[in-house]
Length: 296
Image (cartoon, rainbow, N blue to C red; front, side):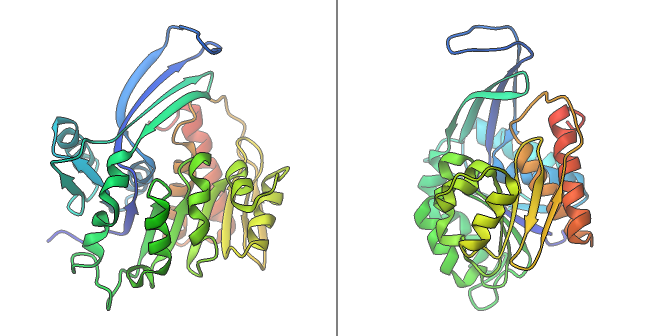
C-alpha cells in the first residue's frame, strides 16, 4: 500500500528553461552559455528537495493534458513525488518559466503560470473530497504553499477550514507576488519564508538587513518568519526570540531555486526533529550548497 504523503506542496509545477553564462551580461547582450530544461516551479522545487531528504511530498497543482504535462508528471514520479493529487486539465497548457542568469545572478525572467491561476481552487479538491482531508477532518500535517496562486485564492485559504489544522509554510514565489501574501501574514499557523525585498513589500518598509526585515514582519502581526538576504545573515524570528545564521562563503554559480532550497532544507530539518537553531543552520548550508552547484 502506498503510504500517505509527508507534506503537501501547493503551487507552481512547471518546466524551467534556464540559460546560464559565466560571463557578465548587460541589456541586449548575446553571450555563449548553457540552456537547460528541467522540472521547476516553487512548489515543485521544494518538493524535489524534500524528496532528497527522504520525505514523500504530494503535489497539488495543475498540468496540461499535453506532451509537456505528461513528460513533467513522469519526471516528477521518477523523483519519488506523489503526483496523484495533480489536476490534469485538457483545456490548459502546462506552465513554464524562463530565466537568464549571468555569473550566478539573475538577469531577467518570465513566469508563464497562467494555467495555475486559471485552475484556481480546483487544485485543492483532494483536500476536500476525502483523498487528503475534508472540511470536518482537515489535513493536519505540513503544507508548503507558494504565492503563485491568485490573491483571491490565497485569501480564501487564509479562512478555509481545510487548512485549519495545517502547519502552513508559505513563500511568495517572487518579489512581484509578495503582496499577495497579505491575507496570510497574520495567520496563527503560518511560517513565512521571504527575502529582504519581499519583507519590505509586505510591510511597506525598506529594511536594511534581514534582522530589520524580520522585525518589521513580526511587528505587522506575523507569527513566525524566516528572512534571507543572499550571502548575508538569515534570520528566524518569532515575537519571543530571534535566531540568525550566516551562510558559508561560496562562489555563486546559479540563483534560480535557491530560496526554495532554503525553505525545503529548513522544513526537512524540523520534520526530522532539529531544534530551531539547528534547522536554520541546515537551511543556510543547504542553500549555499545549491547556489555553488554542489547539489544537482
